[in-house]
Image (tube, helix red, strand yellow):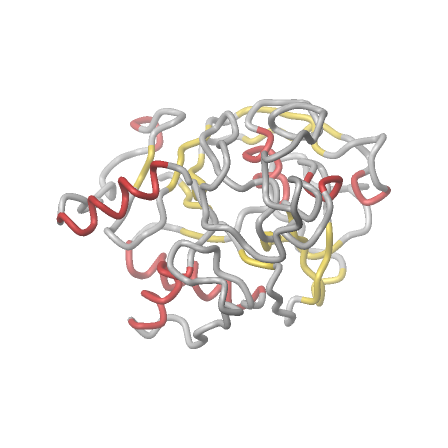
Length: 269
């Protein structure tokens, strides 16, 4: 398991982690910096502004056409998928209503699951109110940019899926049949964990079957079939081809599943 989770837990228990980044400006943050706005808030990693090629012309039809996107401003995104522990703080403080089923796999630092798109949005709204910062779901473009971590290969580690790099149906010698604790595998070049596998992650975008006419500025696509929302990353239930950085899927916005969770984005002032 990633050491950062253990260190984070120690800091919280010891009372040494107090957060407090409200007066910092975007220029004060450097790529690779981490942000904790409160002891029970998710750890956020700063990623730089930049351009990348989104999608894949040789991939699934949903991934076409490959096109250049420019992220105009640095932002911070969750180092890990939101966990049960983090979600249940929202429940305890009245910001979230559901205590989702963990299917007896374990809560704690397992990724939250069985939450709908609107429930995930509700968590970001609660977190924004709690911290005074702007938290939201990432757009598909922001998500893919962060997941790639500056790479152009199928996965953030290369073109070969390899073994024991992620949690999916055929990522190792045994089928997992469940989620793993966040941070169980190596991070990508931006220091983000589980951008390939573990659970699908809700994105802000309405569903469109291709990238034709998609925004090129990193913003979410809010036209199309908004009864369905885009998901990224693949999950423990799916095979490794679904874990590629460019791979896209759709789910009904009202749906919840043991294979879908989310990661949050924090805008920098």
